[in-house]
Amino acid sequence: MNIKKGNPLQKGSTKQKDGYNFAIASAAEIIDLLLYAPKADEPEYRIELTEAYKTGDVFSVHISGIYLDRYLYCYEADGRKIIDPYAKTITGCEVFGKDENKQHLSRVCLSKYDWEDDTAPEIPYHDSVFYKCSVRGLTASKTSKVRHKGTFSGVVEKLPYLKELGITAVLFMPLYEFDEIGKFPQLYDNGYGKYASGPIAGRINYWGYTKGFYFAPKASFAWTGRKKADYTAEMKDMVKAFHKEGMEVLMEMHFQDEPVDFILDCLHYWVTEYHIDGIHLFAGEAALNAAARDALLAKTKLITVFWNGEKKHYKNMANYNAGFMNVARKFLKGDENQLGDFVNVSRYNPVQSANINYITSHDGFTLFDLVSYDRKHNEANGEGNADGENFNNSWNCGTEGPSKKKKIQHLRLRQMKNALMLVLLSQGTPLLLAGDECCNSQAGNNNPYCVDNELSWVSWNSRGMAAEMTAFAKELIAFRKQYKILHMPKQLLSYDSLSCGYPDISCHGSSAWYNTMESYNRHIGMMYYGRYAYIEDLCQQENADADTFLYIAYNMHWEEHELALPIGYNECDWQVALCSGDKGSAVLGKDGKTVHVKPRCIAVLTGLRKKKENNKKTNRKTGEENGHS
Figure 1 (tube, rainbow, N blue to C red):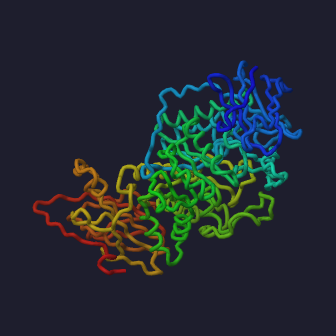
Figure 2 (cartoon, rainbow, N blue to C red):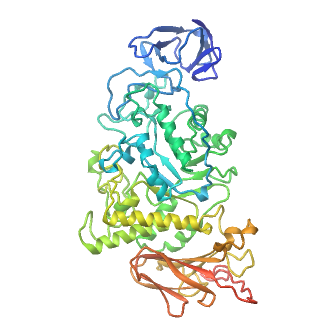
């Protein structure tokens, strides 16, 4: 074995042509590198690293003349074992939520992986439909009917379902080796005597928004984790399977006080080693700005809690915040003075960055609970129902919790369909919470971060209301994809920029071309003209969809309303294509100039513009531009 000072810039363990490089940052004066043969309990080699191996606060060593590919390693300083922050795998973490008191070691090298002809789909934001879930929670329930429950392999078993539903990308909650029960004390000591707070004793962190080892996939999420020292292939198999279906894999990364260079190293690693398509990044502004300007990440979707798109024109950046959710929830339950705000968030689609629209996310009620509970019910969390959001903008439709009353069940079903339509018929990138399409419930718990059982896992309902919701979600997603005007790359202008007689989007009340945005109004019609979806591709101007109008009639009032159709039957043959209510909930007027919409109902009408000889263009404008309110 030959030993010399290594390269301090190559953090972690790196196999090179002439040996192996190890580098770790530490404030200790001396640190030992411990090398373990496979399945050995004691180190076979102990290499003392002194000041001679140190550059700044980074120890580095180069080892040659020995084959270490299958070896495991860790460090030791002041009698305490240390896991490499850049570790690619970690042993002793094979069972979720349990600390088996094993020493935690890491592979020196990962096994070679054949990516075959894997190609990133690179689906633009405006063509994407996101689906958010936990790797564990998606299939851990017995109702999932998969063999490999709660694992990457289990997700692959659900891939045909996700494909059929119409999902283009799955956004996974943390799937790196996060510390769910406090088994890694070193994470809470930065080496300078300062300690961060760790997990609460006796409470599991099911969600994973806590500290962890950011370069290693979570061993308990791998079915092969107990059988193989290198379990990383299972996650790569999952990513490759998604890509073969033309779908993307996105992941969330929750950083707290890690330095910017560490965060960038981490993002680079997941993108290059695991072919990850996007990252929802929880980090400080310095790290966000650095990631936005990073050339290697230029085609990687980078999603943040808030991104000021004016700082840099990167369309790979996206906002993920509660702005759309708060407005949509209030509009859904019929709150006063929400109509104008909803129209604005529904149209919002900035050029510089994408906008992620959702009405439910992991933190808060599921969709079924949103229409079934007025109050949170978090007793299972063990905090006296004091945790979680108190203001949910929810409505229980008449009774708190489960109900056998058909009237309430029908209203809840219609409200859930309305919610999906608010999200999927708006511009921007829609996101669905896993299980919402099959009426998954958490019994009113809006913060089950520490609950790891059937309550927090997705319940795969497949009968009655759940079956109808799933079929509706599938139809709605397909409808969105069919009409390009519903998912444009930039915001619609609300005027006739093509001089074709109609604006790209327009709003209508009881009278055509007049907005009715009074605080007491809860209904409006929004018309889209399909030709604007082909404005940059003139050769497709004669596409069948180009002369199609879409008219979305929103009525969130508890009374029936009549909305004006801006194009009469002699110009357009209107048909009801989608409706959240029962048959007859949206009926065209006899004159073909209006549509009657039942209470708390959304309907989508399609109409093909009739071609006439010597048809004169009318060049109408929206009510807003004519000074109407």
